[in-house]
Length: 186
Image (cartoon, rainbow, N blue to C red; front, top):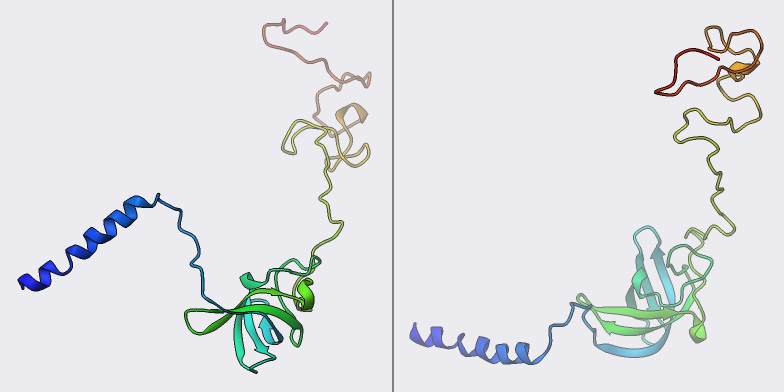
């Protein structure tokens, strides 16, 4: 037992100086080993919803996994990154966890990929209309937005519903009373 306990102890001591000599770096994606660069191929299939598919290499006729994050030059008109079935692409082959993966996928000659016809297009020219509030807040009493008659009918000064204040008969709205003022009407 003494031999097995001593073997693990020198390893942590050797790793500690390495960790102390390097400043703490934020965790980044692991750099994968590049197998080949500027490989041309044809997209076998790509599922836009799932975000992955396969590319058939032209040189070895081998299938290579492609994830949507590996697409470097996306079609600027598409909202999501994708490649179309049967599309010619260029990419780098890297060693992934389960086999070869594509990285840096572009169109031929470094052009943007065409993208899948099933991928959503960006909404060009779509801008939200801004309607400034004309009243005081959340749909309370404010100026009506559509014409003179709001959804609640005419204002009280124009013969509104019965029981409204301002039924003095002259058609003028009632004067407002404020705190601290006399309660008599002028």
